[in-house]
Image 1: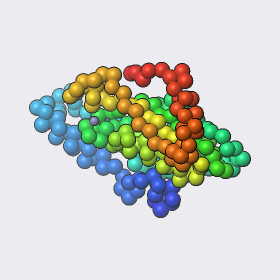
Image 2: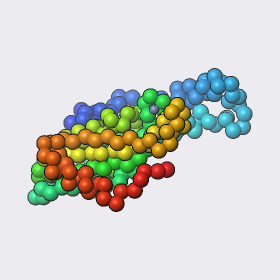
Image 3: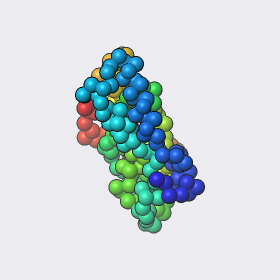
Length: 212
Ligand SMILES: [Zn+2]
């Protein structure tokens, strides 16, 4: 539960602040889907499926209700450091909002501080905050960058996300290797090509092909 819905960090996180997820309704809906498919929801393997699906949605979509205060947890420090900070290969799992199927991959995040830095372990948690929702990869990428911009007010933020989308791999066009890459550049990363290239060079160095 979010401790303070009007906190600037909570507002910037675009949360569902008032209501808890309605687990009972999800269970009933999954039951309806099973019936609509033609399945027998009372057979042994399915009897607890609505509860399992509802529970997994609670986890996969927990980003709407993460408490940003708890997430940041006093891990912002005043430091006289104005060089690039890069955290690469952050694993993420999200849900495509068009098909409600997973997409997953890795995010690379960089910023150049003005006067504040954030504890390194917090950056993957910020990725979780926005990935554990119904998403499109483009918006998720922008939200991560904009959120760090609000939290740190740095000279700039850069985010590159590479994703594999189950909705493309399993159905429709069945492109098993189609990777999607999105980026968001803020401040000095947008304005200055050499800064941007330093980041892009770094994340391409020794990068492995995305696979699952
Ligand atoms: Zn999709």
